[in-house]
Length: 433
Image (cartoon, rainbow, N blue to C red; front, side, top):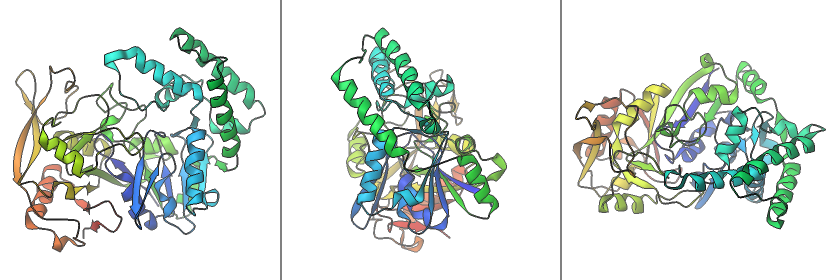
């Protein structure tokens, strides 16, 4: 058996949660391999909306299916507890189906304070983080001073925590933002330590052994990513990226899988583009068209509520993402958002500041906020379909203009579109033959 991967091909928010929910019944195990609670996956079914932050999106698939939080994830015990208790209240027997890697790193209260202080210090150059402490936690990880979930069951955990906390407070003092001795921090710390106790009640495992043994035993695994390829710390629009490897290779390092154990790579993209926070976005629309896409698509962060920047589909960036991930199957989301447009624009190349034209995603595309040195998108225009797609349940029911749009994308990318989403509900999904 080989593990399949499902990940985002754009700047995140592509709709991965819904598709994991659709695909999960075909797999024995769903495993999250990177990211933290800054990534919200929204699932809608039976008239209810569920937002998951750290817990894999396979928890609603039922049966004896196992969900794994892998070693590449960073976990905030407080937010995890709130999310877990909500799922339990919704009838999910989470303790029986969730396993957590001992090697996953813990987000501490001081990580969140460091995140906020660091952003303030950057001023106009801020990255636009969610303030969840993700970056500082990964910083501690690569600096070899992080706390891991397995540490919570060691006899000297309290001493390890206090040492890490005190080092953070020294740094915060340099920022002029020390929380030491304040009632607010004492309350944050107590809540965190209480959540650590709750976390110990779950099955804490050596996840790398677990996933490999399960594959050896013939069980199927779906690896779930967070954020998107263009936010990858190595290959995204650096420095306006997340702090982990969001690409397919991240499933290997985030779960302990060898490259040869990877099978299909499902790449998810929207029929247009969105981005949250700062950073370059070549096809961003600042006009009424952008606002229309945002409003129809309800483009606001699932966790933060932040307004998403919107623009036309960018095939330069998408082709790059397909290449980096070795995507074998494409999944197109939110097709229905473009129902009302007479024409649809698609970016096929960039005109660079020096006048050259490229179809390869370059080292830098500039930054929209700076207003200079920006890669200018070159568009091709396609006819819109002017039809409500959400009622379609088969490929044959889709209008010809839309099918032509899909065929155009497949021809440009060289990879088949295997799944088309025409609405937020799990039923509004077309699996192509």
